[in-house]
Each structure stands twice: as C-alpha cells, then as structure tokens.
Image (cartoon, rainbow, N blue to C red; front, side, top):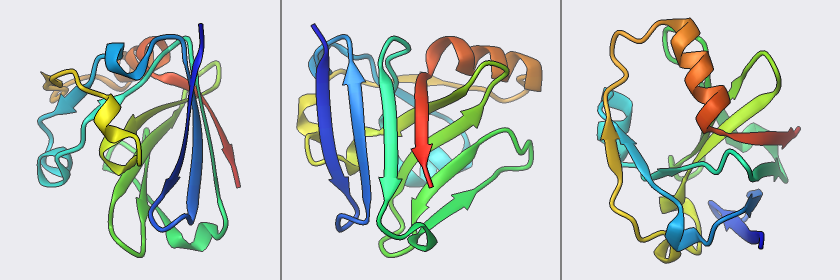
Length: 141
C-alpha cells in the first residue's frame, strides 16, 4: 500500500507530494554530522521506492544552496530560512531527501534518526549512496 503526504511548506510557497511505500511511522530517519545539518537539526527521510515531487508558487523564494563538492542542491526558504530538502542529480535521475521537520505531518515520522558521518566520502561513493538510498525526485520549476 502506498502512502501519500501532501504538505504546504513555508507559508504555502513550496508544495511537495511524497509517495511512500511504507507508513510514515515506519520510515527510518537520518541525521548528518556536517556543520550545515548540525546548525539546522533536520530529520531527513527518503523512500527509494517512493517519489518526491515538489513545486513552488514562486521559485525566487527558494534558495538553492550548494556546498563545496557541488553535488547537491539544498532547498531553503528565503522567507523563513527553513531547510526543505536536498536534491542531487545521479547518473540515472534526480534523487532527494526531505527534512520532515518542515512538514505539517512531521509528528507522523516518529523514528529516532540514525546519525551518519559522510566526511571524507568520495564524490563517486556519495553519488552511489544517493542513487541507492534517496527517493526519485521530480522538481517542477
């Protein structure tokens, strides 16, 4: 059975739809030890068998932030500063992880985040990990 979460994020300027194969309660959450994640405290989720679809009423209000590796766009609301999602282009398609803290249904994601340290990861390893673990993404700009 597929579960769909529809969420208006950051004053309804950014909308996203998640198609999960598992109930939100059963999706594992992740956290990262990088300085960006430590300062934003996101709880990240991705269902590799699901789908993340996102669009904004006004894309000028969504900042695309890139770290030094340039392998991923971090979508951040320019109005409130919330970190919404990370999107990466892989060899096959776009993949994403989503910060459940910015969702209206965030309380349904109840697992304790597993903490990961990706320091020193090669770009090839990073891309392979995202292709395997992140969810397919459609970003409608």
